Image (cartoon, rainbow, N blue to C red; front, side, top):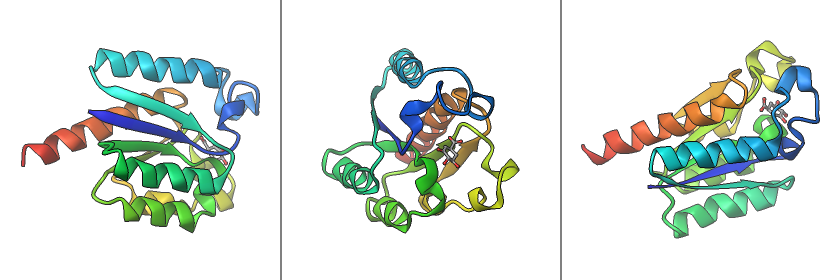
Amino acid sequence: MKLLVLNGPNINMIGIREKGIYGTMTYESIVQMIHDEAQQRNIEVEVRQSNHEGVLVDWIQEAYFTHVDGIVINPGAYTHTSIAILDALKSIAPIPAVEIHLSDILQRELFRHISYPAMACIGQVKGKGAQGYIEAMDLLIEYIHSNRSE
Ligand code: DHK
């Protein structure tokens, strides 16, 4: 099984930016944790980050052509604005995606309550900090397994 973990703008600044909201774990150590946990689950994972919306769209489309089994995505602030990311996720269906947010976006400003990409996701994990990436990965693995055995 091959999973792709995509991170949007400013996620590379996790551990530096607004620690009270996003925590103190650095982006690099989150990436390492994802790799370690994927190895334990015997799955292949690639983790990428971009500050650019179009690059994220390109990577989502690429996932279709490289036969990725599922996507975990933290679109950063594009969560609340990007119909392009929503459409990209829709265009690669039935490849499943799970959205993850370190913070609980529903407990924050009103403008963070809407998520466009979530409309094309099979699940959303929020407010669990870095551990949320692992929870999102497990959700995805479970979904892929149950859909395969159908
Ligand atoms: C990360 C961001 O950069 C924000 O723009 C989102 C999300 C929330 C997070 O919690 O991981 O609003």
